[in-house]
Length: 258
Image 1 (spheres, one colour):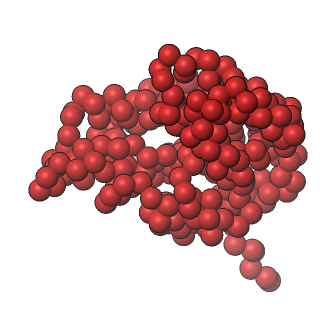
Image 2: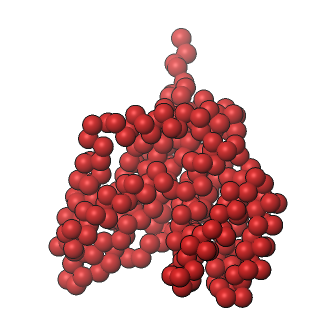
Image 3: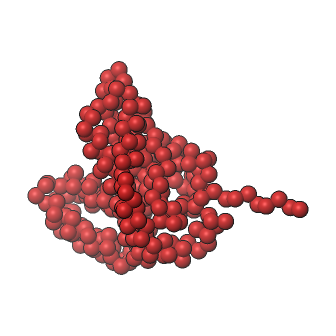
């Protein structure tokens, strides 16, 4: 009798990746990244896939190491990875999962835009950019961005360059159902986790070593949603998006359940 085919590893609709920077005193105090990978399962659960302590500034090379480790641990496929606009990161992602779509996080783009603008203009810039990332089509988004450039380009050319450079990884979600857009256009899924981590890290100041920093981050994550109420609410909110993913990526999610 033939042996049954081996079970395929999990397929995730989305993995959100980000790095939190902490101060670690290892001989001298240095700013070090803690890499966080958060997945959403086919059932709509949020799973922290791991924490990794980097040895310098955040880099695509280290993210390649993280993503390769996840694949080696059994992650068979990912439909989308939502991340910041780090140079080289899309190449790292497609090296590990060739079919995966890389989506630049709108929150990161807005946050980085504000770095180039005077605080008195933040609200106006946010309002002017909203029609870009909520446009019904890519063509409409480009028209809205041309209007933004006409209004703000002379004063803040660096913002225009920032969005131009991010264009390839910014526009993918515009081709999808609004339910998918609502989920993937920002890293809200990981922002709540990061906010809790930042509060815990700020309370500690700096850490004596890498292990202490990782333990603090781990404990902060474990203290999230102790009653499970947020988890239930999150799962229900994800149901329309998961149905849309099932249709848009025909067969790939189903393959992960076999």
